Length: 69
Image 1 (tube, rainbow, N blue to C red):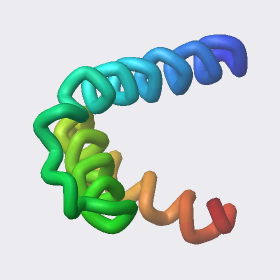
Image 2: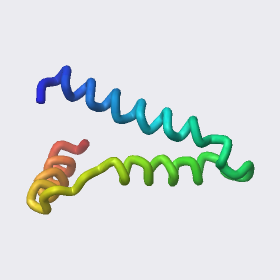
Image 3: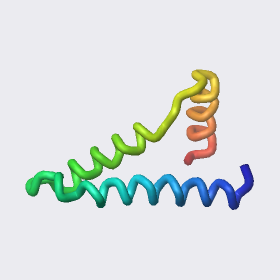
Image 4: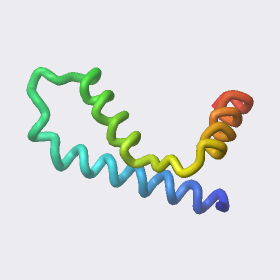
């Protein structure tokens, strides 16, 4: 994946989740603040992930650790 493709992917994914959350914002309880909204946002990103390979996930975890990402 080229750098431009990576940037485009990130932009599309985050925009999609942002639009979904904003569209449903009227459903969120009034007492929710940044904590609950962060939890919901994290869940939305978790739902958007696809775990295809345990080896690939282990490689990813290693790279994140080694590269301090």
